[in-house]
Image (cartoon, rainbow, N blue to C red):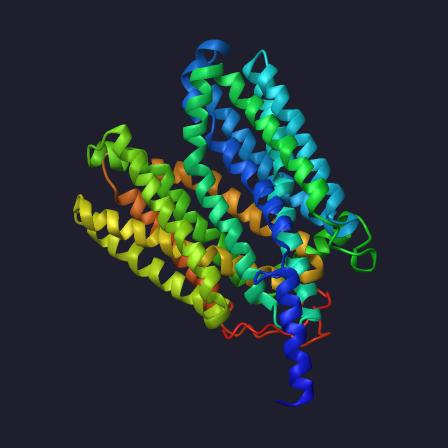
Length: 446
């Protein structure tokens, strides 16, 4: 073996030992996963408490549901603001501030005497919790870009996809365990106890970030300027066809999931007559498919590359949703084929989510906060949009769910398979369309 090759191999092995296959130290990755999980836990943990909250706060169903809407709006707006701020001020300070705001807001939720104050506190809780989502992605982008430079350029988007796979798994498990935890706390301490648990979790997250998450954006790579610079950066991201394609694949890929989640109670319980317990099992099975595929993706992305796996995931989702839509258009789909198609769709999303995130943020590694913010805003904006769309078709048919899922995956496929089809790893030291320096070539094999 030539001397240069041996040195390159030693550098690669050294980087692998120091940072693991994902390019991110394991303690840091665990702290980021915890920060990433706070928002989905805060979304689903208190849903079973709605009836008690209605009685205690003297409000109606719409009043309590508004607290969930406020939380989602806080998540979306928080990511749009906190992401670019992290490009300007670094990652640690905004992340610590966001988790602290989330903890304080959780305490305010627990003490809220009225639904109006609870709604305001939920907005703050979502706004602060957004830091954990948007900056976790940015930190991974920073770390994998840095490690790729040190370890002979081998980390790239493949290493990022492995790290993002952990976040995908976390995001899939949290909504499953959240109702179980919430139900147990509700029985022991009431609905206010749920928000005290969320407060404690936010405090634990803040401590984890303080101890285990270093500053990953050095001052020389930070962006100055105000809102004008921020909007210019985001406009540059949207003018990058590849970033836009990956962002559409990510956002509308989750649009498929949210279409299913919004309609699933009516489809499973009204159309197919499942009990509440059986419906919960169905949700858990689909969540298992989503998270298990995310785990498999971490193992195979180094061999096949994130672009190839993204194409596989989108193609599988497109086929499954189209078949489900055809079956639903003919009447009530047979139960077993419908369940299998939905499971395969959820499982394929595990491939799409991690790889689309890695490829999108790789387009702008030194504007990773802004790139991550747009991904999150698109994701949660669609979450707020698809629920009423699915509800327009009524409760007695699966067609609105299947049609909305199919429409979403068509847009996702347009982005991931067409807009981004000519994406090439940028040259070392090159510049992307958003005017930021890339960390090095990507060796993803896509």
